[in-house]
Length: 390
Length: 147
Image (tube, rainbow over all chains, first blue to last red; front, side, top):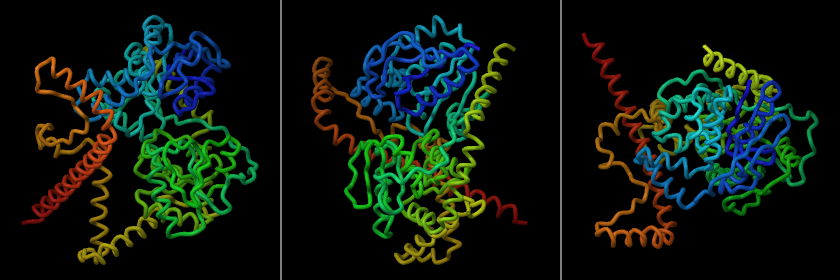
C-alpha cells in the first residue's frame, strides 16, 4: 500500500510527542508498505524557520520529502490572534487565519498534495492544530486518516473544527479520552477509528545505579520541560505545601526550565539530562509526577510504567486520570491536600507502591508493545481501504 | 508485593481523609450543617460532579441568558476608534503598535484573571444546573408518591 505521512516536523533529532509518534509509526509501517513522509524544512516548533534541506531524502526504509516553510511564525501576530480567537466570538475566517498563523505555512506541501495526493492509497495526518493537517486533510479527505493528538485546550473548542473533524476517512486516537473529546467536538461518533496509543520497547531488566544527581533520600521525579503550561507552577506550590508538613522527600525536576523555580533545599532542578541519567533517575524515583492539565497521551507516563515506576498525575486532565485508572498504575490529585495524601499513601505502603508500578508495567505489556500498536494501525488502514474500494 | 491494588480503592481512602479534614475545618469555621458527615458527603459529591462537568459545553444557562454580548466576559483586546477614517487609523496604530507593547504585561495580567473568572462562571453555571436537576428529580419523585 502506498502511504503518505504528513507531519509538521520530522527527523531523528526532532523533539516533540507527535513528531516522535509519526516517525516511530512510519518506520514500522515501512516494513510492509511504501511510505513517504511529507514534511517541512522546519526543526523549531516556535519559529518554523527553514533549517533542514528541501527535497527528497531517506530515513531508513522511509522516503522523506521536505518542503520549505514560506515564512517564520509571526509570534506577536499569532499571540494577538490567539487572544481574539480564543475569546470565543471569532468568525470562521479569523479562526482559519489562526491555523495559518500557527503554521508551519507550507504552500508547497499543500500544492504537492493537490497534485500528487491521489497517488497515495492513504494519507495519514498528525496533529489537527498545525497548518499542514488543517489545510491538507480537505485536499485528500477521501483517503485521509487523522491522528488529532487533541488535548483539552482552547484550540479544540474552535467552532471551525466541527466540520473539519467530519472530513477524514478514518481516525487514529491515542487514548479513549481523546476519542471522546474529538467525537464530542465533531458532534457524532467518528468511524472508522482505532485507539492505538504509542509503542514502547521493553526497558532493560538490570536496574541502573542511582544517578549522582539524585538527592540522598526518596524523591518524586518530574520529567520534561519545566513550564507553567505543563502544570509545574501548581506542582511546585503543592510540593512546597507538602514539604512544609512532611520530611524527607525531595522533588527532582529533570528538563529545561522555562519558568522561575523557587530555591528550596528539597527541590532539585537538574535542567536537561542525558538519556542514561534520565533512565536512572526514573528507575530510582518513588514515583513519577505528571502535573500537566493538557495531554493527549503522555509518553513519559508510559515510560515510567515501562520501568514499573508508579505515577502521581493531575486528575484535572481526563487522559492522565483515565490512563492511571485503566492501568491501576498510580494515584491522582485535584488539590494540594489530595497531592499530599497521595504522596503519603505511596510512602506509607511500599508494597502498594510497588504493586501499582508492576500493574503499570503489565498495562504497558498488554496495550503498548509495538506489535500490539501496529496491529491496531494495520487493522484501521485495512478497514479504510476496504471502505474506499467498496 | 501487595496483590491487585486498586487505584479507585486507594483514591477512595485518600479522598476520604481529605474530605474529612475539610469537613472538620469547615465545621470549626462555622459551617454547623456539616457536622453530619453524610450530609457533607452528599453535598461534596454533588458539587464535585458539577465542577467536573464545568468545562463541558452542555450547559443550559448560557442559552437562557441570551445575547452573549450582554453577559460573556471578553478576554481579547479589540481595537476601535470613533474618529473619522484617517485619524482613526492613526489612533489605532498608536494603540496597537505603541501603547499595547508597553502595557502588554498589564493586559496579560488582566486577561489571565478574566480567564479564571470565566472558568468560575462556567463552574457556577454547572452547579446551578446540577442543583436544578436534583430539584426537578425530587419534585418528580414527590409527585409520583402523592396519592
